[in-house]
Image (cartoon, rainbow over all chains, first blue to last red; front, side, top):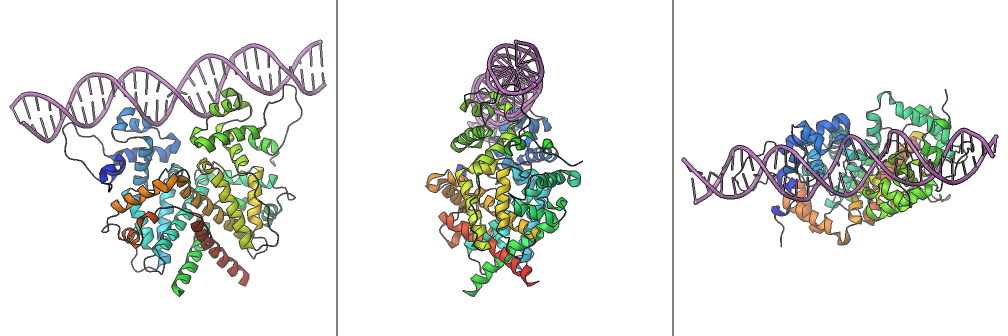
Length: 245
Length: 245
DNA sequence: GATATCTGTGTACGACGCACACTGTGTGCG
DNA sequence: CGCACACAGTGTGCGTCGTACACAGATATC
C-alpha cells in the first residue's frame, strides 16, 4: 500500500542516490551530473531551444541514443539540468530576521536565474521532488520559522516570493541578451505609436508623464527590490495579523 | 527617423487592422481570427503541444503551407492565439475603489487562464503590443488612477498583480487536468517519503502539522484570494506611503 | 481585356524525440 | 578462474515538426 522508493521515476532515484544492488556488466562512463553540466553549457550559450539529445550527446562524445541509458526522456534531462543549474541555496543567517532571510533567499534565486535564464523556459510538468529543489524549499520555509505564521501561511508566503522572482525574471529575461536595451527602445517607440489616447488614455498619460525610453517593461536591480519589498510588506501585514490573534 | 506602422511585424499590422492599399489578386479566404480560433480549439482539447501548423491547417481544411499566407511563423500564430484567447477585459466599475477594481481585473485574468490554461506555456519573446493586450494593460493601469501612485508605481503594481495571477495559474495548471487531485496526492506521498527530518526539518514539520493530503502545492479559489490580498496589502502600504508625502 | 499579384499546393530538407534490434565488453558469481 | 549475463554504447529507422521554394491557377484592379 505504502509507496516505496522503487516507485519513484528513475531520475529521482538517481538524484537521491538510491542505487540498486551491484550487478554485473560494465559501469556507466558518466554521472548524471556530467550530462546535466553538458546540457547546461549548451543552454547557456545558445538557449534552451538548442538543447537536443543529439547535441548533448555530441558534446560528451557520444551517440544520441546512448543518452537514453542515463535518462529516460528529454523531460528527465530537464530535471537534471534544473537540479545542477540551481545548485544549493546559500546558508541561512541564523541571527537575521525573517525579512532579511527571505530577501537573501530571493536574491540567491534571482542570481541563479540570471546565471541560467533558460530555467524559466523549462516546461515544468510536476512540482519538484529532487534533493536540491527540496533544499531551496526548506530554506524558503525556514525564513518564516520564528514568525507567527502557520505552516500553511509560510508555504503561501514562500510561494509568493518564489512567484515574484520567477515573474520578474521572466520580464527581464529578454533584455538580458539585449545589448544596449535596443529591444526595450523599439518597444517603447511602438507602444507610443500605437497607444491612441482615445482608446488607451491611461497608457498614453503614463507615456506622457516621462520620457518613453523609461517605459520599457523591464526590471533592473532597483525595481527588483522595490517590487520585492512591496510583496514583503504584504507578508508583513499578514504576520502582524497573525501575531495579534 | 520616426518609425511608421509599416515597420511593424505583419501580425501586428493585421491585428491592428492596418490594411495596405488595394491590390489585384484573389482575396484571402480566412481572417486571422478564424485561424486563431481553430488553433485555440486544438490547444484547449489537446494542449499547446498539439498545435502544429499542419494540424491547424488541417482543421481549416487547408494544406500546411497555406497557413503561411496568413502568418509569417509559428510564433506569429501564438500571438494571434493569445489575442483571441484573452479577448477583451471586463469593463471597469467606475464607482469602485482601486482594490475592487484590480481584484476584478485579476479575476478576469485568472478566468481567462482557466479557460485556456495553455496560454501560460506560450513562449513569449517580447512584451505584447497587440490591441487587446494593450486593452488589458489599460484596464490594469486604470485601477490605480485615483490613487497617489506615480505612473511608474502604477505600472509596477499592475505588473505585480499580473505576475501573481500568472504564477498561481502556473501552479494550478497541472491540477486542472487532474481529476480527483490524484497527482497532488502522489506528490504529497512522495514528499513525505523523501523529506528526511534531519535534512529538511522545516518541510517535515510542515508535513506533520496537518494531514499531508493538504500539502499539495495547489491554489484553490480561497488560496487565490488569500495570496492576492497579501499582494494588495503590500500595494496598499505603498499607496499609504505615497499619500503621506 | 491585360496583367500584375495574389491564393493555395506540392515537394523537399534538416532537425527533432525516441523505439528497437544489435554488438561487444567487463563484472560479479559459481 | 572462467563464464554467463547484464549492461554500455551503436545504428537504423519512423513519424513529426517548422518552413524554404517553385509552381499553377484564379482574380481584382487598371
